[in-house]
Image 1 (cartoon, rainbow, N blue to C red):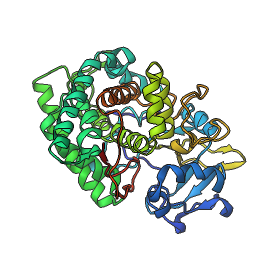
Image 2 (image 1 turned 90 degrees about the vertical axis):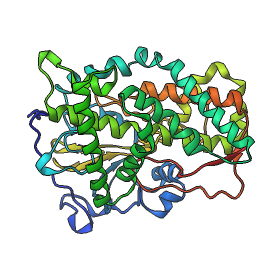
Image 3 (image 1 turned 60 degrees about the horizontal axis):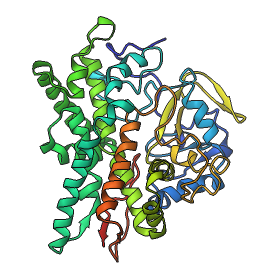
Image 4 (image 1 turned 180 degrees about the vertical axis):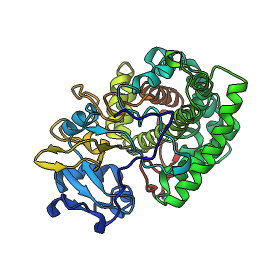
Length: 419
């Protein structure tokens, strides 16, 4: 039965946590405690950890974690199928973010399955379509060069470039805030809220962050209702698909989802790519030698350094690869692991700019594919082009210990660079 986003109710599917809450239908031989996103082996080298899942784990296993028990699927083929079949793998209640049950809302459109999903996507597609994001190209290039100006001045004064703070974060987040019509002077505070929500792995801290985000966005939405502008928040607040204005719950759930999704993923992606290039001067030289292949280069870097996962809830009993999963079971497609599937990407840990074109799962697929995928690709492309024009070679500052924060968006915490 389709959910009513205007009158949301908390999902009825329970969230199991711990070994004592493993459902009876889960075969004991498929139960794991992998440590994904939180364990020391994962945090030592997250992407190599996920690549190794194909050697260490079955294609489908049941992971038990303090953050919640769920089926993990790591095969590219299974993810393609699951992400393209929302009638089996539903998005309702699949996101992990805590919400007040007395003031519940759906994250839109990620938690809305067809047929209602499309009406929400149509509201913002003109902004995030390939044609829409191309209108932002010059603005993104200008922001990139402004940041590089500041970095070069900093380095000339004898300071170190901290990539995450000087370029990786401010470039995509500033562009995103421009698109949303939100204030640039709150950029760092917004990111801090997102980091607490996405990386704390403490549901009390996550809930506190969610309260801050909620209070701010409700005020911002009211302001846009009173004073419309060209930003996405205003576009959503004033939209009326099929002639029916969105309810307050729909507007808030839509804006809130975009806000959370836009603050961390490209930031983490850039951090991963720059760390890799700083450690692999041969690949850096290859990028310089092949400017005409920048789109292929970006696609391969996105495959190798995917940063997030995709959760679902089984809407019916379903068997896959002989594993019987039950209605209400939670499922996570481990997208970076799927992009390391050796049956689809031979020698998957190797960065190969001449790989045959295959569907990568950095942005999922199907009706719930990432709305910001075209923007993210353009941002990575421009970030590389403008940086490499002016800083053609760089390396990690000697003595640096690369660290990763637990959570569902993967990237190095700090990245000091020298050249």
